[in-house]
Length: 334
Image (cartoon, rainbow, N blue to C red; front, side):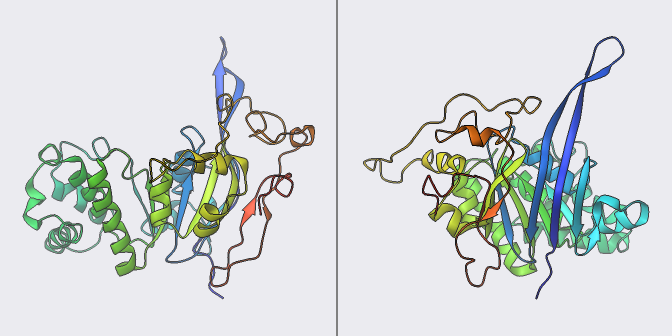
């Protein structure tokens, strides 16, 4: 049986909120609060949630751009959370990131060739001539012309800049790419071009993706697995067909109902969410969604629910549909 490429176990990332004369800790922001995930080679995991739910922090923590408070991140059997020095430097070649904003994520003072070549220089891969040729090849791979390497970022559109970001992420031939809202800042027509490019590159290179987005239609298009995140926790996860075909958690259902219908005459039954997302410094007791859930009971406020399997495991997927809700049977989840 194939081992997971990425395995995250009980991952936490907390930020102290300091104040007062002596700068003492007055509160703690639990941006990531006990996340566990698995990703197999060649798969795409779509990470979905409202703004502020912690999904971007989770992506940066998986890259170790943020130090985990506790928990483990295993990549291809190596514990990233304990890797240091030369081992961490070597493992970083295998995991790269495409950032959300194509305007601020690349240095405007560097040419496109210097931007894409920089990872090769840092890791000492190839001679200068080989690196320049590699840059030309990468630019052509992402749909740009090789002779564009001498231009500066301000000479490109947003979609072209994001392609440059993809080329930079591919420079070291990574096995895992974490894409943090890679198309949210782009026009719809350009979004489809970048998404199709990423799918094509995955098929050609066997890449694995963690695809972070708040756009459910995009996630449905590119993902094999989906994880729904709310207030630092995963509340539902499973194969994309099950999540979109049989959403079980009340929060997931609310997100699905908010998707505009393809037919304007088609009406959907929906129960609008009440209130605002609670502060991560003052989450409700028990289930984090209890303050907004239309099905809440007193039992929901006693202890945080665990992810539990619901329904049969789909054949050929190897991943079960899991939901963190004690009332999933009563509200007709499966």
